[in-house]
Every structure is written in structure tokens, then in C-alpha cells.
Length: 318
Image (cartoon, rainbow, N blue to C red; front, side, top):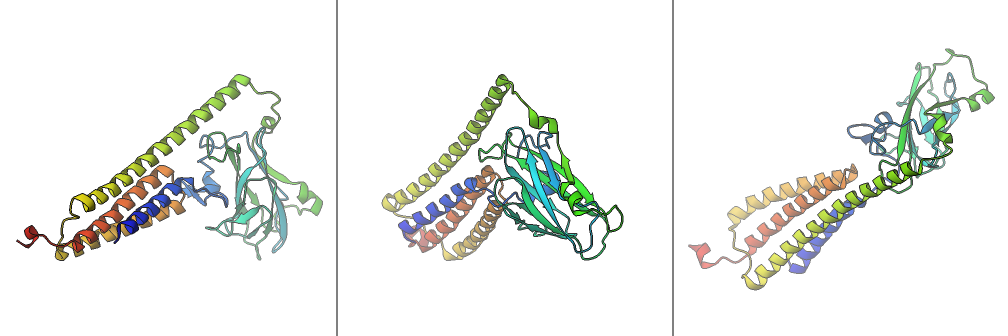
């Protein structure tokens, strides 16, 4: 393997590793969050990790009882004193069929659920009731009002609401007009009409957000820079070994083959773990560690190949 090719390989892997912390979720929230379903556990990466009554999550157009095979138009809305937009996720546990409208999408991991396609509000979703009477239908809805800084931080707020739609014939039938105005919601409506905020409290919140941002970014820049230095030192060591040290020491093929297989298997497992981490959108710190360990394993495979191809010296022939 030529030095330029080796360098390109190392830089490519490093670039992929460093890009991982910047990956986000442009197509709605993840289906699972901290081992649980986001639609049930909430958006725990946002806010304090707990639901907040400062967010009013509501859904209108909900019937008291469904008719078999009928279509209903739901509107999911978020209310917050300071934030106008955010995201949501809605699921009926596969009882009927939820169809995403403008601004929303089907969830990739569970096509029976819908979520936002981008930050917004007042999403229209169509629900087709089951084709037969299956009893009461349970719904789960989570809404997240965001502060617009592009980061899942303590400035965001979310809330959850669970509700039921009764089986056919078990409740007074809705007429169209009644259904359109029937709304189910959760949250503190009084919090939406806060006329004046305490300037000292606002400044304290702003300073806390700045400190949190500096801490996160400082860690990100420090550890990624350290990773770059480590990779650069390894590349420099390879260069000096070839230029001034006579190259790598010879490794007999009887030893190189099993060593290469072990290191290759380790590199493959770590590489799959790194790819799975990106797909699961885990924290950048974990991705950085997985990326560096994967890169080190790949380097081990490369060193085995280089040593196996190195010509034997007199001491190797003794």
C-alpha cells in the first residue's frame, strides 16, 4: 500500500468520524429514546428531561367514538408563550391507519406512526378507523416546542397526552361540526399569556444557555483536535520509519495471517458499531471514541500487512 493511499484512507476515516457529531435528525424525532419509545417516554433529550406544562399539546377533530372504516382529520398543535414551532409524534398502536399530511411524515421505524418532517406547527393528519370493531383505540401524542437554536437543550420544552377513542356504538355519535371543535389537550393555558418576564430571570437563563453551549462546544473542539493530533502523529511516525528507520520490521506470514484475521475481525466489528452509533444518533462523545478505536483497529490491520510484506533481515533468518 502506497504512503499516499494510506494517508488518504486515514484522512477519509477521520473525516467520517469528525462529521458524526454534526449529524442530526432532519426527518423528525427518533422512534426510540434512551431505551424507550419517544412517543411514550417523551423527548428526554430536550428541556430538563421531564414534561413541561409550559407547552400546551393539543389535537382537534377527535371523535368520541369511531365508525368502522371512517376517515377523520386531526390537527396537532403546540402552544408556548415564547416559541411558535416545534415537532410532534402521534401513534395509534397500529389500530387504524395514520396518514401524514403537509409538513409531516410517516416514521421510518414504525410507518403506522407520524411525526413532523420539519420544525413547524398545526400539522394536519388523517386517521382511517379500523375496518372492523376492535374495541376502544388508544392514542399517544408527544409535542416539543423548541427555541430555534438548532440544539436539543434545556431551552426546549415538551409534553405528552394520551387519549382514547371509544368503540362504535359506545358513545353519543358526533356530527361533523361537533367533531371539528372537539379538542384534547394537556398543559397550562395560563402559561401562554405571560405578559411580562422578569429581566433578571431572562438574563440568568441566557447566561446558563451560553455556559452550556461553551461547555459542549469546548469539549467537542478539544477532543476532536486531540484526535487529529493523534492521527497526525501516527502518520508522521510511519513517514519517519520509512524514510529514516529502514521500514517496518519483518513479520513471518505464519504469524501475520492469524494476526491479520484477528485484527480484521476486530476492525469490522468496531466499524459496524460506529455505523450503528451514527444511525442511532448517539452522543458525539461516544461516536468520537468509537471512531478513534475503529481507526486504531484499521491501522493495526495495515501494520500487519506492511510487516508481512517487509523483506526479512539477517536476524529474521536466524
